[in-house]
Image 1 (tube, helix red, strand yellow):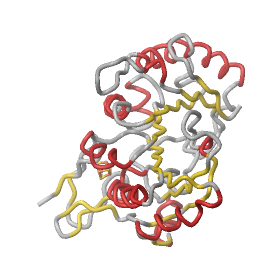
Image 2 (cartoon, protein in one colour):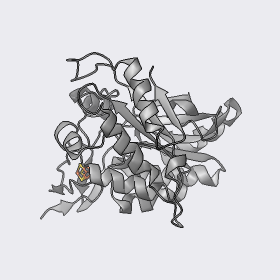
Image 3 (tube, protein in one colour):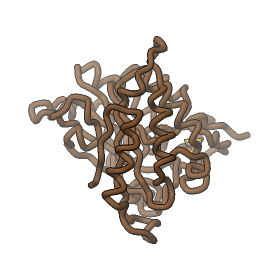
Length: 287
Ligand code: SF4
């Protein structure tokens, strides 16, 4: 008998002990469980602007943690060492365990260094949303903040589990065609759009689009993407989309995508201007 994982659109049907596409969710005693729960591969006290969050507690710092695994397969992944390369799963085996209590305590210890809380980032945090939820709850109990940096490819049930404890999110909206998500990233654009549309009703949200030459770099695509954002509403139905910050970032050849040059800086500035036709706060990244 198989058990279904409901974290993302793949809804992997798993046998006992079998891992899903993300490489970290498996069935243990009949229950889908994240094998990377609390397994920390990366930890740093980062400026909040590096998440990137441009309009949330500017000038502060946040303890940023990552584990391993991902439910996308972006060939240009900037964090492939911990996301979905063979190396990532080897590293995962040796990753140090930090319990939610230990991580929340660590965040408190760094308060005197300007730390505001914990950011769940680097790999895809929602494939172990249970760790995010359990830790973020304790961080809130200590009077500190939680930040999520995600690809947004998760169900609203997952959002329901974590959103009571998350203060700010940066979510990737990586492109604005189904083909780009399906064929290149092995993902699902509609699921990401649904997640974003609901997340903006619950906490501060900023969005990021990495511009890949020849893939998602037309003015038309960025106009359509920014127009969709501009129509988003809050929980009361008020249109808040034009106030949602968008980060348009430059690609550098990495991992399995080294067949093209870095995105032209002038193009990034051009596309940012296009997005500004619909949005008030558009930032350029990696330029
Ligand atoms: S989170 Fe992982 S196991 Fe669950 S449906 Fe997505 S890819 Fe499959």
